[in-house]
Image (cartoon, rainbow, N blue to C red; front, side, top):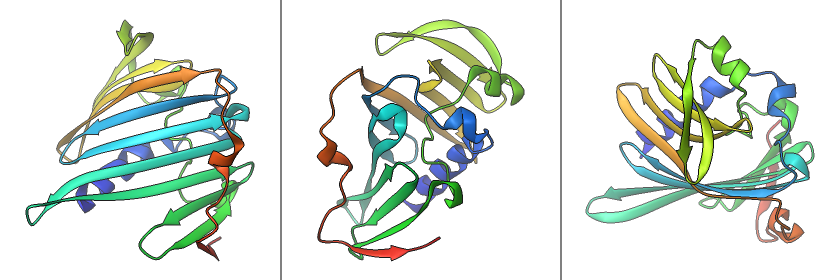
Length: 193
């Protein structure tokens, strides 16, 4: 399970080199995107965003088998304007930091075609993924399918492991209950940065 976390962090590191202005906003006001990951382990991710991403809910769940038992590990990040809250269910604590001081990019599913070209990717045409026409880019370590600067699908080789991510649900322009971006009352808050 730890190896998949390392791979996901490595993958997200590719996206962290973008400027804050590119990564700052979603191109649509609100939406929900559900991703499925395949690699050494399987993973799901559900993202809700509103106000073009000033409000963000990102729940990643990794599924693994350890000693014959199914195990899942979840990480929840909530972004409220300029503060990122990360929930640790094992310790029942919330750490938080300002968006500018966080060690990782919160909106890891946004990248521009210009940035992909700067990273050495080559535009190879358009393809339909999950009912959406996407621009496809190929690079040395894999391919990405982009729609409105949102990664809809990626197939990457990271540390000799094939990782596939695909959006299985994409809904935009929806009304999202503000309560989804609220912090649970039963967690202790620790300041990290």
